[in-house]
Length: 182
Length: 136
Image 1: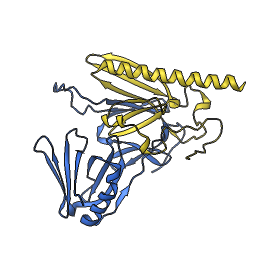
Image 2: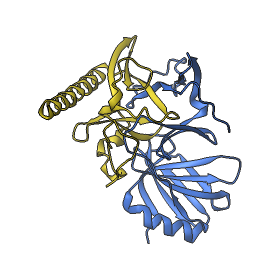
Image 3: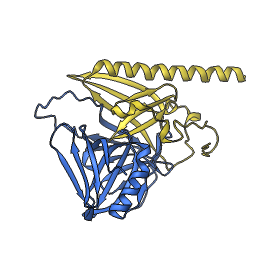
Image 4: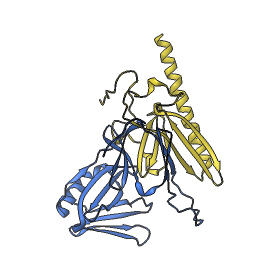
């Protein structure tokens, strides 16, 4: 059984690489460059499988704190092999996290660890890392706006032609009279 | 079939019944207009997030220095312009996404995206109108 997968991205990065599974853990290596990332088997708490933009993500939740590592670019057909590998090497069950693709703009927000998740019919539609929220405003009784930090820092003139569309702001309508506890 | 029961008065619509319906283009982490599914797919923190055209109100574009900004406005309660029958205002607890703004240094692309969204919206509205007239 193949223990290596190609065209895998590390985190939000845009460099592709390959990832390999072994009993000691997993290791990712950049294709064009020397960057490597290793996740030790002993540090793995659980592993999730979810659909993201770049196909499927393997999300490794680490025992230490709430830290996690993510790898994007797996294909639908990789699921069974990955499930077998993580079972065999790390004794964990690959947990499928269902994502909503309904196309609705209404649902519920929920703070989950270090993320603000937007749920549609109780399924995650997307998550926003709380750390990326640079500013938030409440306008009137029903509107909350979130501004996002420029990932490039912006200020130091690092004007790289980004290939991606950069999310800068999101506004929510939140029912005014409703209070939610917890 | 995945039918949703959320009160009467608005039509059910679903962009994709499962992840397999997402078009390949979402891999590029850029806004994509999927005419076939009447859906605009937004890249949000690595997720490909579809929004059915029925949830969209309009789109506006502005230039600021080297950047072009694209703002997508959605149908939400509390807007006079919102058409009541298109959204499930029956759920008083729901949080709505009201708008999402992006920026890019590629103004031409945002111009094209903006036109595609406006066209799709027009097309769908026209079809709705025709259906209503047929029903009368």
